[in-house]
Image 1 (tube, one colour):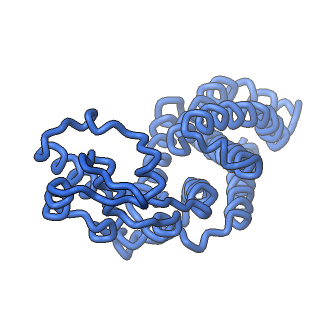
Image 2: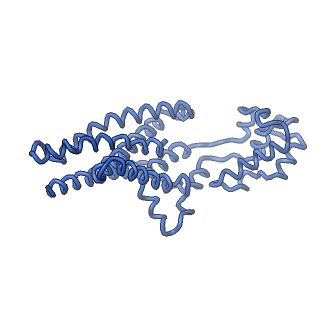
Image 3: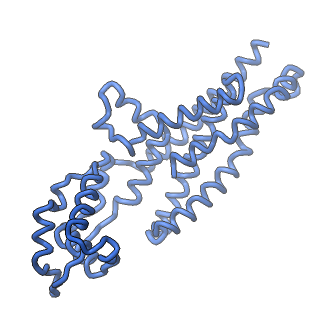
Length: 284
């Protein structure tokens, strides 16, 4: 959500490029100062970012069920998205000001957001980044948005395997009844969880095969014909969101601190835009 919506902020570039000729003419005629022009454009984009954050929050929280976490969590989610969109908008506007024409501005901003997405901590954690590139983790505003959203989602998460088995939300038939297929599904699922330790869940091919050869006990009941989800949840211990946060190196995130960083990121980008516009005015 963060990466996609941030990259969509390039939509402000065509408007800035189209208005450039008129703005430069009016600035030369001393109609207004370029700093006031940029400030008015920035203020005009605030309601747009607010509506976008509200719509995205409603859709995402409704689809994922995170909306049931409580009003405070929902508000934090929306506020983080709002400041993220403001930072993305400020970045795109700065690129539009310094670029000679529209195509190059879109290419530059797309490249910036692409690099930010790679180093925000989702695809590659800081520990797995090359030492000489780890500083890039702290540059993107997406880093602070992503880890704040991760923290408010997983910091209070507690999962009990036995409760999941009793709830039985999955259907074993959806995975197929063939033991080999089931083993492959579980093996692929485990290998795909690159940020978590494989042996944490206590699942390997031998354990899976043995689990299907005999009934498994969950609480006071015995499952004589265990399905895939029964095997997984009976073998896996209870865990909480701290494991996930630690695997992404986000165990000590301070959401308030990250929000402050987002605010200052936006202020710095707007200051750079105003500085460039003022410098350009002096150049005639």
